[in-house]
Image (cartoon, rainbow, N blue to C red):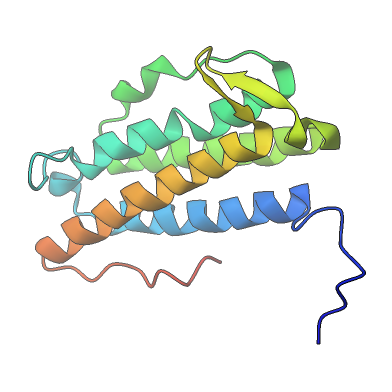
Length: 162
């Protein structure tokens, strides 16, 4: 039986949210790594972008979102198009992951319920904006799973986020 008289102030702590997000990022990294080099930036289905291009989008959103929440400077990295090999893409992914870990603790707790305008156009509470970026990554990672299966490759187990 649940104690309905005791309600926590929040469902998840900021630290728990970052760990959840980084779990998704670790899994998405494994999806990127599973692609053959020659298919990462060329293979697509049904008019969808190749997964390497999708990874460019994800890189352009995650760390820039965290950076924007900390510094209130909303720019995404325009040089992601220079990432044209699996090695350079993964190296950048890792660098952005470390940046997120370094910046995240600097987000004031009250900011998560405050309204922000990300990248000058997306208005919402900080929590909702972060959840959108996570949802977007999960959605696109699903495309990567379809691509890998179409290439005859088994994708990583979706539940393994460590």
